[in-house]
Image (cartoon, rainbow, N blue to C red; front, side, top):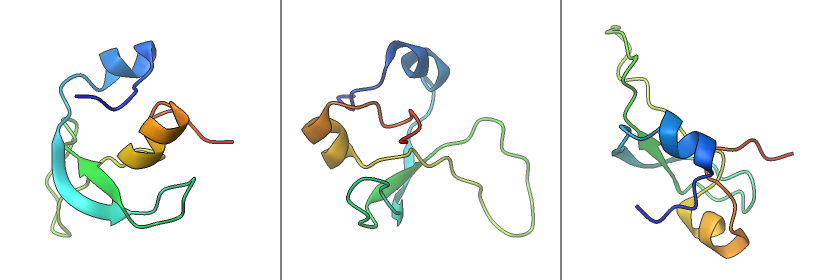
Length: 73
């Protein structure tokens, strides 16, 4: 996976994979193109699946060489 994850997040999110296409907004470009990732700690609920969303989209991650999971300040 070529998503410019930092060393901390490579280990933390090693088992997560894309499940939902583009449901969240990127904090850099503000476009709705952040994919939802699987959540291994998900507990069943009647409202649907709880996805994990990175801070930025893959395009901005590559363009700015930033980790998709690190907080954008």
